[in-house]
Image 1 (cartoon, rainbow, N blue to C red):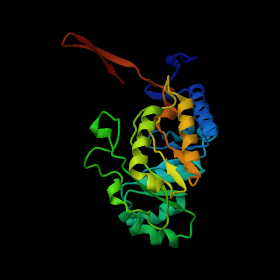
Image 2: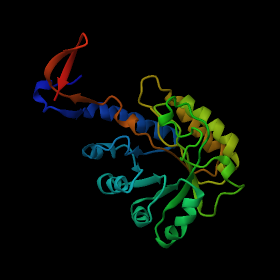
Image 3: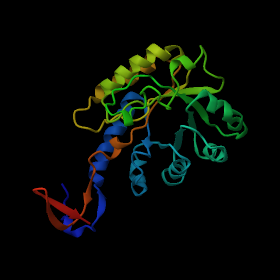
Image 4: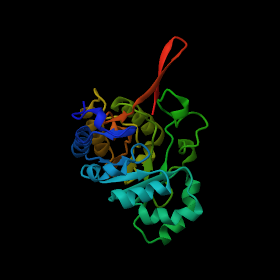
Length: 273
């Protein structure tokens, strides 16, 4: 708990506890060092830029899902900036190449549309395609990127035997606050459907949803999963994870004051500021 009384804190505000944040960050860094994975911050999950000077002590970069997030990562965080958008806008794409080291496309068609501009940029930007494993353990359809008819990523039947020239990575994301065993089952589904493509890539982005800072998460299992991938696919030089909520999991408080109490339906209801 806090070592200062709530009465001394402005209200309302979101209060981040640096000690708790550093505990999460130390754990995340430890997983990265033990496994050889690159773990970066998903800005859509935690974008409190006032905390970036602390966070960047532990991780090498960020991942963005919009141009503004790419700018935020580049200018306020520094380090590597990765991006994935369902569709890139023509008038914005050149800026992505200015800020990003890795760009994931949602489809081969999107890659074909922009690949020449990627080359013409003269920047060392590595390109990937997002895949749809057609497997997910997310219970709520609204948050499940693998439901039938999903717009997110390409299913295996849309690929040929070889990846398009210039594609160096694959990206998937199908977890939401899940553990390493859900990731293991996901990888089994991916190897079944995309195994022939895994032998052709330089890097694999396993997305977010890895809630490794939640109590009870099996970190050794996650480390062994990642090491196993490196051993099985020596062509893969970089495995990337991009959690968001895991960074700030249980590190803060929403501070507010009760302004009034009203009775409604037999319940006492608090009115906050």
